[in-house]
Length: 485
Image (cartoon, rainbow, N blue to C red; front, side, top):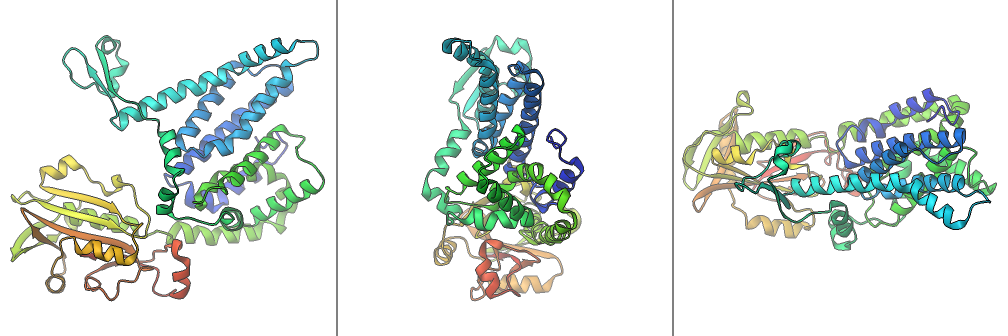
């Protein structure tokens, strides 16, 4: 793409590879990462379409249109916000084909008919990929069940590729359109309030410059200069499409009340491609600050921010599923963790053990990262329950924790002091043993609570959602704590 618009590919590549957005955000399995990748592929296809139009002055080849339609559908079903970034690409596609089809000597009806035929492959790509996405989501979330009409047995996904299966294929249930579900969820302000509400200027004045540093300043300065000169388009159609993709993305996302920095990570594509030429001319005026800023931010967001969640989850997994040598002690039972037996499940001793994990005021990790296999765990009489109580205030949280099984903190502290091994304590609750673990950053102060002394603490851990508290208590706010309730 850089070569097509006569920009330096090496400058564009260096910008992407040295950006902490790439190093800290796009190396994580966020949906925003996939959104950026699909947007980049869409821009690459659009680049070829523009080149074909400039060279041959013809309707877009069906294969390119169909591929662009597939990418549009993949993007939208990955994140509904893809529409905001990809919309200018669609407008450019329509403009190119309309311009070719509407010479002066043709009638309006003929033009509309030919234009519709030119756009048909794009529509087919969107429709077919959307159908595939809906079916996959419906089967994955078990809303739609496939079964053998002969014996009623469920049909596995791989069996669908066998023609013999098709004659006995039965379908029951309903479909789920995750894209619409996502849209409905995010249109409810109460749902967004659970994740945090922000002022409308948050993206433009905070997230945007924090993500891109002096590149954001250069982009803003360039855009203001172009606006003053009345230059609303570029000589390059690709630059025009990319520029408006960036403006559309950040502008419309700023309307939303929930504004996380990662929502803007797709902006790296239009910024890098459109500004690489100007950066090559700036040279030393740009690079030192850019490299220094991204080096610092890569450490902050790649090493410190939410850094101790993975070690905390590893400990929770071993404590909740791999404890051994349980010995009853009154209404409690004490178990031990052997580090050398990592990955080993609890030996079934005839009792049932349940661990309830409560996440509070921190990132809620995907459940599969706990390595929890429900069938395997149940076979060993262990259960792991995971809750996110971020919407509760501190007093509501403490009241809710009082309704959970409470272990004897003094007994737990004595057991921890008497052995160099990790100790796990459960409390009998009816016919099973239960315990609760509270996972919270040190920006939430529980120092006056009885469970504070038996905590496990991990550092360094930055929770930048609470910057006001970090600034007030900078030396004590960089830990992730596990509290045994």
